[in-house]
Image 1 (cartoon, rainbow, N blue to C red):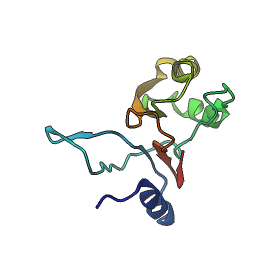
Image 2: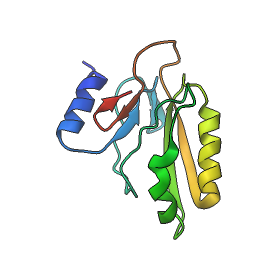
Image 3: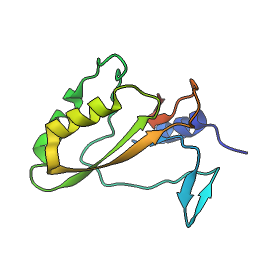
Image 4: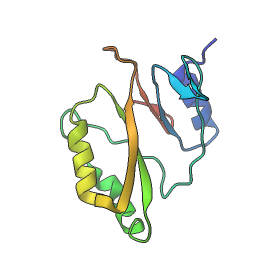
Length: 130
């Protein structure tokens, strides 16, 4: 049986791990598409994962990223951005991130969710499904 996302979040948070992830309609791995499962990978990081809230109301604050700007001056790093695919103002967020960091970062990411209108949480982060 599938492990509910909330159970996975609780287990990771209970183990004291910083993490982030998303719920997707399928996983592409090993030359195939899988409808069940999880991909888990450990990344070296400059800082803990950050959850930016309030996109719909344009009430979000990128101040959480201030410390990153000084660190990325020395060499190029990659930022992984996962967003709820149903969220509003995604392009505004990405534009503001690029205006802040420019080409000092490589950008990688995508939209999470299961392609249906649903209240289910699609972004998992440090003990919080949001």
